Image (cartoon, rainbow, N blue to C red; front, side, top):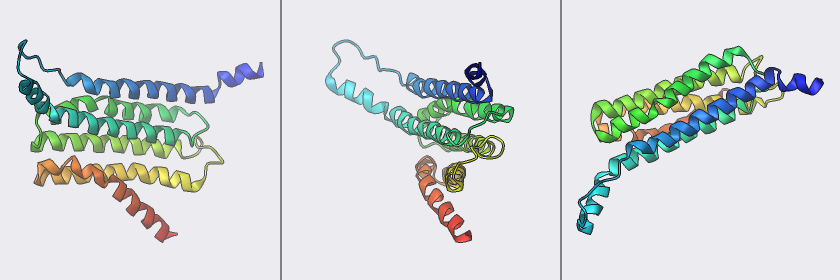
Length: 209
């Protein structure tokens, strides 16, 4: 009887939320490749035409790679965040859905930017949407690493690092937005500053303590 209570208790709700989220991440990351359409050339076309067709798809493949890892990092961060939680709370549902909604839209913004490489508006929108996803992710992190959801034995250092990672994503996306307005081609490149922002936040936190 006791085992049955545990299986259907609050912690079971946390497991369902995690399983549902994993499924959404898996579906979204798979959908990225759907917008890359295989080129159709007349039968008997010379090899150079096939190579040229593949080269023309370079922006789509690049967009796929970038967004694959962006979504993958969001999934890893989601896993890292909820690994610090031990108790389910209804307060988790709406922020988690908001994060999943932003992630679910990533294939569209990926296709928009890939179909219009190095153009200001598409690149800006991609980085801006990533910033929105970052804000949703950061909100979920705050709730999941706070009472009454967080594991009572979760190290304070792990909580701080997790939140800093979330903040770094927002700052990196904002950097990409700013860069895209000046030099559009650098917009998505500036997402590489996310680890640098994370390092800066870590050092700032240590200097405060």
